[in-house]
Length: 142
Image (cartoon, rainbow, N blue to C red; front, side, top):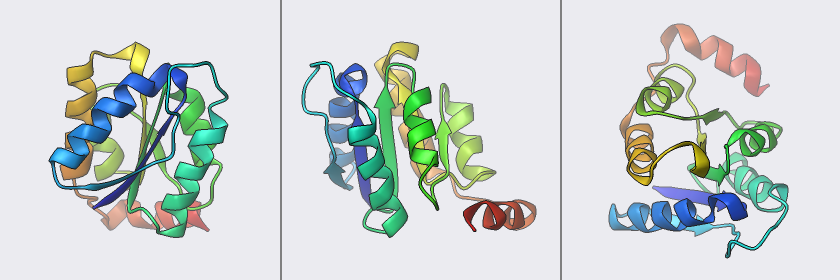
């Protein structure tokens, strides 16, 4: 799978860790930055990540920040993006299963690194169940 990833300075360490994790799993990763822990403005990195997913250049996307909230807000402003803020494995599973989340947002300050990797793994492995949720998601994407 081709996965886009982007973060601000507050999510940089986890972005690097997740990028390496994804590559070890055999995924192709497109890194939209940032490339250091120097203070920056998160929309500069988050919006291009979301736009690449919306255009189909990446099948899915992961964005990171301190809390993950601002990053999800920016991503969800892009038509066709369904970015779930995930704080545990269950939120990642439900984001895929019920909401067909094509992106997730994680907060580096909100969880230990092991949890972040488990969230990513669960989100990648969980299929969308479709059915009763499909109509609602199609309405959102229009």
